[in-house]
Image 1 (cartoon, rainbow, N blue to C red):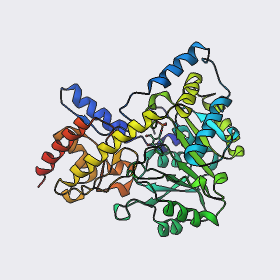
Image 2 (cartoon, rainbow, N blue to C red):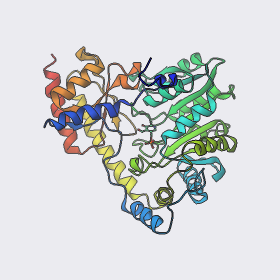
Image 3 (tube, rainbow, N blue to C red):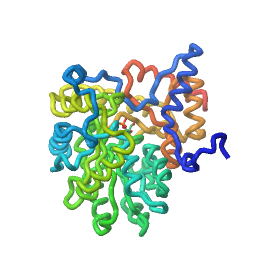
Length: 392
Ligand code: PLP
């Protein structure tokens, strides 16, 4: 029995460990210790000035009240155009719901589709909030293991074996957090083949990192024939335009589902902040040079970091193709991922996430975010190299 007699469903929710590690790191910093932050999942770039200017203009022009619940028509229109240009999906504004940050799309998708007892196939390791809200909705997360042996691609045999009459939803996160993998076209097409004769199954396609791919295309399953109507695309401006604090995300789904998501929105948020919706039009439709610059910086950091980690005896590291995370294998040191990450923080002053924060199949790994300066990345690798020497 909890102190406040909370509803029992509260016990089904879990938190996002990156925020917990951040709290530990900040506690150390408040004692004067130096910590290099590689636990954070947000770009270290400023929001491009033209987007900030657009928000100021919008506020001065009176975009400070409620907007229509699913978003302004002009914002939904800009999102539909953007999806056509970057995701190769022909869509229309009535298939778009604008929400405060991308996370609500996950939450609403589970609430509107998952019945108690339904199964949701979820990559493991993956963004921890998926599992938390599947359980909150009364569903059962079913893990699709992602392993470095398979270069963190989706294992099609495993996926077919996991399907059951109770499967309601499959989650795809492309590019993937925490592994940084980008699924090949063949891999996405093979997933589609497996799901083709199960039209009762929906797909949640989390594409929040899809503009941050360094070695080639990112294929949305919704762009494959027959899949648009059964896919809910989750995206937003947080990562692509360095706008995590603006809270502007969106879902793209068939118009019937969009109406249901609108109902969830009116019951929870009323609408997304009005001036951020106008600024988002500038982000999505304006010049994209800042995205290209950020991407080039991330790529240079990734290349350096992966090479440097591979030079540390005992560490193995796949080459991630997208997002801004590396997911090195630290299992040779004989410590659990949790202990390794804790000791790395307390003994070496490098904050990284334990692989198991993203699911049990993350054991043997840590996630390091390279959304910090090259100088910090170099210092972190030096600290890590000295730290692992103390383990042998
Ligand atoms: N999906 C993934 C895979 C993420 O890593 C994140 C944020 O870290 C989100 C969604 C949430 O994005 P937002 O901050 O726009 O809610």
